[in-house]
Image 1 (cartoon, rainbow, N blue to C red):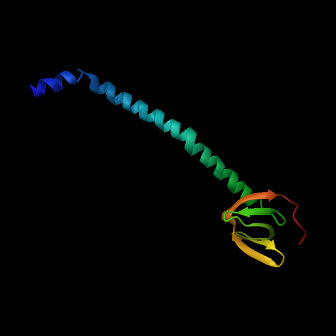
Image 2: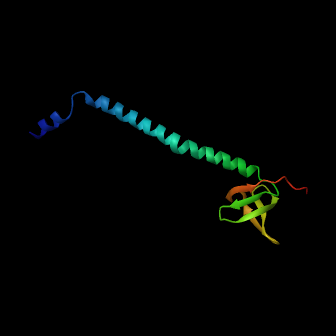
Length: 108
């Protein structure tokens, strides 16, 4: 009796269409994740890298820690910023959150 209930519950020939439907649904969910999560995040990362590469002396920046300062010296991996009079802080370039006021580079 138990086997007859299982056989009645499973439609004949439905296994092939169920797998195809599941694959289609998985593909749709993958596309939704790509367009709503992955693509916007990669675009934000590209913009942030471009912003970091354009930092020049005289720009006012905000670090991820919340420090606001003016760029005094630029090197490959880090920046020296002035946060107050006679107070210079060295900051890793990748930890810059925003560039507030772009100024033209000062003459060395």
